[in-house]
Length: 231
Image 1 (cartoon, rainbow, N blue to C red):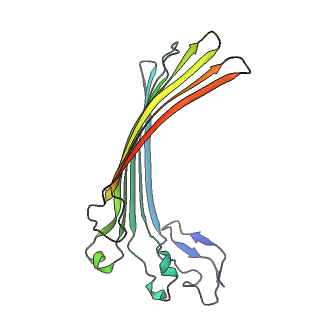
Image 2: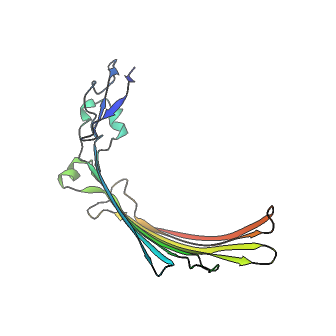
Image 3: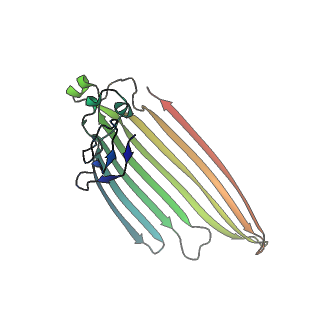
């Protein structure tokens, strides 16, 4: 029986160390020893700004970046009868860059226009060293690179119908994702994703306030998507 009293994280390197074990011979680590492949080095930054112009217009732009060099634990290593196989592997690398733009047009005194338009893009790279020794010697990495972008637009219009206030919201959106193996990747038994996906949607929603106690609502949405597997 092994009882883990609780881990703590070294702020300088993110590695995990067990505080104390009651060890009956099954643990691969003594109290205070480093647990291999648990480190991570994270760097992130974000920049965002809003620009207002012509009284009724606003544009918000944002950029975010995230980078993480981290260890990965393979579960089967901890169930094998060969503890000497548990070694520190080369670190995996994850990087995510994202970009956003949000535009609003809300003219004063105009009940027909409350316009919003959004656009965004993300670039994700997820790489790890190949665990086959002969591939490690060649520096071949195993992973994928994914680029996704999309946009959507919507508007809200207000009407006085005589029988109540009508709120009508309508819009559409599109997104596209392309994921493929890393540039230096090779065909392996369990390859990364290699394909693309696109999606389109359109919607409308209506709300009619007949009285203070009665409201009629309704909506309609159309959605289409398509995927393609290149592997």
